[in-house]
Image (spheres, rainbow, N blue to C red):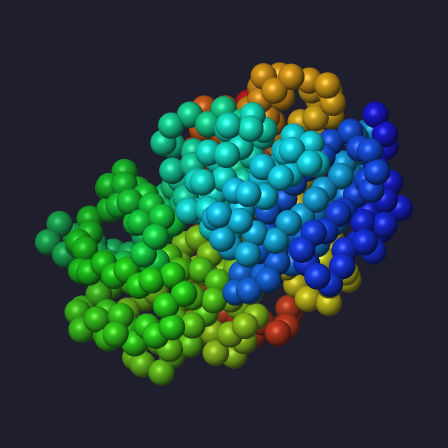
Length: 411
């Protein structure tokens, strides 16, 4: 097997054009592994794709610096434009024309479900690095699908534990919860997972209201008014990206954040949100993310965040570490199984994979659940606090509550 070199990574960076139609990183000619990645590189979700591209560059750089000899990798990034029809067409093209054995990425959960159907038919692996619907790992068997970022089930379980620890209730006074989430796959699955987790944790609660604005909703004032009309102890929001930013901006002109505590247990603490809002990010919001730039305080995470900044001039959103994790998972599995290993051998290797990632606290390594094909990771929830160490964000998360996966990594 060919050893990855830093030179190939640099060449890959130089060949990335401004058109964003197709970017090739890593080995430019014949490689041991061909990987096709689907991300939105343009439009409203374009920042996730751009950050994912740099995360992949960092993975190639990390692999090149390892003592072990890893297979050479050619990574082809295509712009999904957040459209399911385009994404599924691109999968077929990447398999047929580029002979990719792995598809990675996909931000939107609804698109991921459709991509998974195509990868199953094409008999190639699908490594999820960003979408979070737990339906991907709990409904039906997908032998060649593996996800390396937290899903809604994991995030909502941590959220339910947080509520149980930080909100007081009595048999006669349950915690009053309102929920607002996007009217599509991700929002509904997050709500279902939250209700299940609250019952599992024996939280005494009552539902005040549930609201379902459209994805990319331009005006949230009617929803905010509906939340203000009823007494609530905790508003749980499962929006992400630009939608969450717009919601908070509009809510800032009302008394919503004085009316009730506010939480987003999956994406609210994403650096993109913190940086865009700056001084307009309220303090005291209960938030989490799939990767934090200021937690854990390890050398590995500091390297990832600082190296990303050196390359891009900005700090990473969680999408970057998700893409990084996906490439590291592919490289490690192929290195262990062999470049000529059958799908069945590779599948078993993925199922027993252990990875040390930037988001892992000291003494813990992420590991795959062989039954669900969902990577098991530590989830940390904090509150937005004034902190100017990573500008343009003026608030970072602190006051951490940390939740480890229930099961233990195999020895």
